[in-house]
Image (cartoon, rainbow, N blue to C red; front, side, top):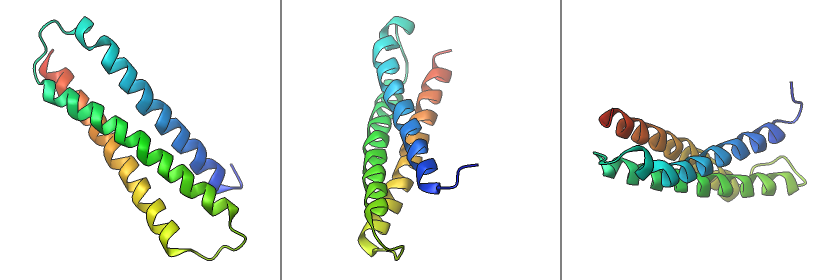
Length: 110
């Protein structure tokens, strides 16, 4: 068990960023090689955009986390807490949309 929840959150965001970036690379690299005449190309476009947004939201959340760590007080600062919260919601939504969209694409092409 980790004593500092900020470290856990930072690691979590690093893993989401790594998964999203890896998904972008794999989809872009193997799309034409795996599927000769793919159906539902719009699902791939949605997936790529969602993974790219997931990376951006994760970077924003990590930046807000660094801001939290640099504070000398535990009192919340409204703008940083709000931006950090929206960034986390954005990470979850866009990563989930990316996974679901790519899953739909794969199922359409089986």
